[in-house]
Length: 543
Image (tube, rainbow, N blue to C red; front, top):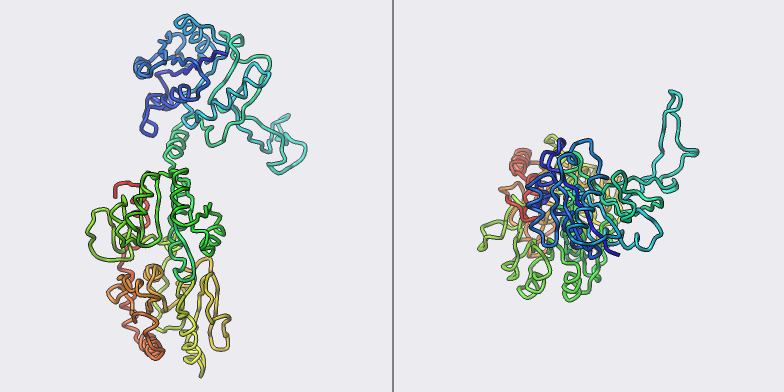
């Protein structure tokens, strides 16, 4: 069976001038149809019919493509594709000295169509006893119609979409027909079949809106986030990766986690994210070799040169977070927002300008300053490995023992396994686990206790004067949580006495002017623009 693909492409277009030669994703629109025809493996010859010398000259650059100059009477607005395709087939057969069995009309306005789908459609055509196969999508909907001036249902029963009968819509991507059915007035034979193509390949460009949709889809990248969450590490890396993933809905995002760290995996799956579990670095590299993402984001702290060199051949772009290891030199970009100071390498972006705040903080405003510290927020991360929550809880009980002097709001993470279990309303202490919107709690707080991680950026964006206790020595390297940004930093939590915690709290709660100045310093930071910068860094776009 000899098959020819005809690509009809006029030079004129009123809706989108010069449409077929405009660049779509950096390539002329018509190139997608030509390359699908050449690359699907089931088409013997390709011909482009056009009245435009620009289009014909471009098509002629492809080896094996026949460029056919279309007569002016076949290029008028009112002319359908039937005589155009018929004319192109006759001339191609004459020029090539071949009689074709199958004619495939390929519209240049369907750039999302893949060569694989086209090949599958041709295979289906060969196997089915039909004269013509039309590309369609199945779009069942409840429909209404006009009958005698009244609008009435065009269905007998209201059903869910999944229960409705098929409703096939032509996509215009391709039409496959037997040569005998191709005439000057038709390309449809007696026996017609349909090929349901993927909906994400079905857009036919007719308007600027269609163009914008196709540009967005063609720009879609495969992005992989590598992150873990467990008690000793906490869930900060998981939450940051989630935040960025939520801001990249236009791309195909996959998370990769070490299968031994189920806490982080459970959190990602609860957010309906695609998660791949691997066994250590060997499992990761093996998976990347098969998947080959456009962008790989490694959010697992310090990297080694050896691991980064194993990863690089399998990814388009390599980005790491909070990376103080030797492997940072191998990355295309390193984002170290939590560390201040200049870097030795040009590809490293450090400091608060590159904070990726969760979207809830981008749409929430701080409350008015409260002169009385009526409500105190206590949150020490997703796991709180030092159980600092328990120490502040005991302080809160003692502080309110003679009567409620402040409301304490303890927010515990999903991985918390410490001593705090329930609140004590009689002493003004409330306990909440794994809250959906932590910004709602911050907005009510007059001051806070926190560890020295990414939560400090969120508290600063809400202007909540905060006492900080670090969970480990690495957290102490996070330079943002200092007085010049509005924080009282007591240092490593395991080395701070209970008396110091209480005395600092009582002093700060009674120091109105100090808390007001801390709030001002916090809100002077521009933290909301950081996520846009980080997204551009990940995608390799200019800042």
